Structure formats: C-alpha cells, structure tokens
Length: 118
Image (cartoon, rainbow, N blue to C red):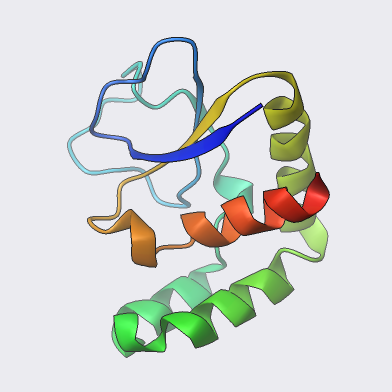
C-alpha cells in the first residue's frame, strides 16, 4: 500500500487512513475534527530535537534528519513506527502534519524509514 504526506488542515483523501504524526496538537483544530484521523504523537521527534531544529532552521535539515532517524531506532518511537508500518501494509496511509512545509519536517524521514521496513 502507499504512504503519502499531507497537512492536517486539508481534507482527508477518500480511501486513505490519515495518521497525524506531530507531538503537539495543531492550532485551530478541535479535538473531534475528522481531519486528524489517528494521533500518533509517539512517533514524532522528541521535544528536545524538535526545539533544536526550530532554532537551528531548515539549513540544518540533514543533521535533524540524521538525529531523528537515530531516535526512530528505539523506544516508543520505534514501537510507533512499527505500528504505522503495520497499518501501511494493510491500507493506503497519509501521514499528516501541521507544519507549514512538510518537505522539511520529520514526515519525510518517517516515510523513508517505512520504505526500509518494506
């Protein structure tokens, strides 16, 4: 099955299971909003890494991605990633984020790691 990337503020494409993969709840979205899908906050970068990247900026994306890949290898993040891989094996999945630029977020790292699970 396929894995795509989307923004939580957009409608869920038909036939797709949406997984919201940010650690923080998105601004302006109610808790019962159907655009969230399933909240998988455990797979998101640690607070420390997220804050570092926020201050370092997109110029440090490669370093951020490497640090995040290391985080995804153990603990709750590895378990959450395995759960997402199981879901993606059964159905098309959209990994949603509230970030303004998903291409320089943690989501492409998750997609690359999922490709490695296949």
